[in-house]
Each structure stands twice: as C-alpha cells, then as structure tokens.
Length: 231
Image 1: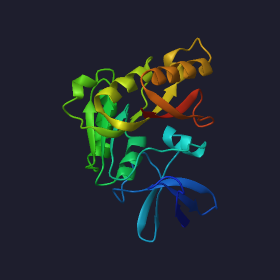
Image 2: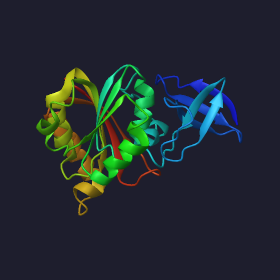
Image 3: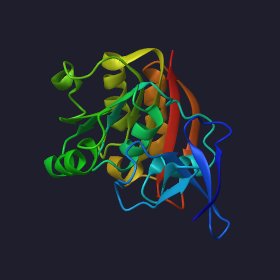
C-alpha cells in the first residue's frame, strides 16, 4: 500500500514513496508496468506504478540517500552505462530517461549480459545491451551515439581512466559523468581514501571538474560516488 508519492525536489523522474509503515523510500515510475527487474516492490498510486529503488542493490540510489546534490540524468537523454551487469541500476536509469531517452548498456560478462537481455532489455525498448570491454570503447563505437552523460560502475583497476577514455569518444561537450569507485577493485593494499583521491585526480587531469564525492556506507563499504562535468 502506498500512502503518498511526491516528486524528489531536486531530481526529475525520481520520487519519494511513503509506504504503509510511514517510511519514505526512493522510487521511479515503472516504464514497464507489472514487470519487476530484481524483485523490487511495485506499488500503485493514482493509477501510476512505481518501483521502489533499493539502496543496498543500487549505488546510485545509495548516493542519493547519502546526500548527492546532482543526478545528471534526465528525461529524454542518452546515457552510456559502463558495467551494466544484470540491469538493476540501469533499469531505474531507463525509467528516468523514459521512452524518448536511451541507455547504452556495456557489460563484459556474457552471463550477466544474458540476464540483462532476458530480464530487462526484452521489455524495455530504450535500452541497448552491448557485450564489450569498457576498456576498449573503440570496439563498440559504431553502436553508441553521442551521449549526455556516462555512468561508470566497473570492477577494473583503472576505473577513472576507463571512464575518461569513453568520455573522449562519446560524451557531448559539457556532458556529465558519474563514477562509482570501488577501492577494493583498484588496490587492496592501500587505504580507500588514498585510492579515491588518486582516481579523482586522474579525472581532473583528463579535463573534468569534480562537483561532488559522496561516500555510500553503510550501503556499500569502501565505495564513493563521484559526479563531474567535462570542461
């Protein structure tokens, strides 16, 4: 049962959904009513179906709850999603950009891509699954148009470089990026804060203005979300 739904005051197409016990949770309008992606609750309010957005399953949801000030993903935009996995967060991005937008989903693991295709993309025509290595953007350059923003969540040692290389090829002038940095994937011998600073400095060196860095504990340990704009 939904008690109330209100648009998020800062982020278009993202909502605060008050459920039966009085708690507020993030949600997005379901682009494919009646279909869930990862077992999330589907709730109706005034004939509109919303999907609750689990912060323990989605770093973007966690970052919003932890005080993210900018979500550079809007209705009608084109988004390149690096590290789409089986589609949990990409499906919410699909809800946000809507029918007039598009999400290019790059994933290296064939098993995850099959799940993405069968459980998500088969029902969402604004998503394109791409089996490719995000370290080699030239390998999928013919499949991706210029995009308004790039979301990067890859378990690679050089996460900032991977994002910057893709931005050089696909991001529009003045476009935005979001980078979910996983310290453990980069260097387990160093303190996460040291790893975060190094990756942020790489982005700065590649021409990005860092807008915000947000830690997302307790939803994920040793992770931060970086929001930046290409100068």
